[in-house]
Image (cartoon, rainbow, N blue to C red):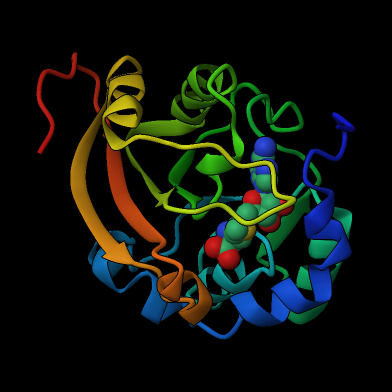
Length: 210
Ligand SMILES: C[S@@+](CC[C@H](N)C(=O)[O-])C[C@H]1O[C@@H](n2cnc3c(N)ncnc32)[C@H](O)[C@@H]1O
């Protein structure tokens, strides 16, 4: 495996994937958590931004978005599809996200269909980095993939309880949790489901989850 390109399938199939990811709208995909997304302008970090569907929608709402996408082919396609002066595109990835300043914080971090790309060793430092990028009271909205994995993709099983334990260690408390079938027909037929979590950064130790 090339450590600089752990998911060569994404680069090879970028055109098809971008079209596929754009078939579902931001509003459809994020319906269960729309009430958690601030209405007024705020600063949002979209990690693993893919086709730019979410970054584009959030920018159109008036938010300032930093969109992180490590795959050149996806990032270039996304910038073309969703041009906006309110989106800053960055070539970077978890767990380090080294390009972002150590002092920079966001009101909302979106991590949609990305966590399963991190192996068990990467997930604890990645959760710590996510927490460091969030202001107190800010939210992480993330989705966890369950079910069969496509061939040729670097993907791992990600458990909800494990994720909540990692989050709790960073004073991130779950305020929303919901599991649902995939919205992509092929994945739904294959039995893929997703757990959506919203985690709030508190300044007191986390003792319980919903
Ligand atoms: C299934 S796609 C989801 C794209 C987009 N978030 C969406 O919901 O349509 C996974 C994305 O995560 C990106 N990705 C993979 N590994 C990553 C990492 N370590 N850090 C950040 N992004 C990563 C991929 O390049 C890809 O754009």
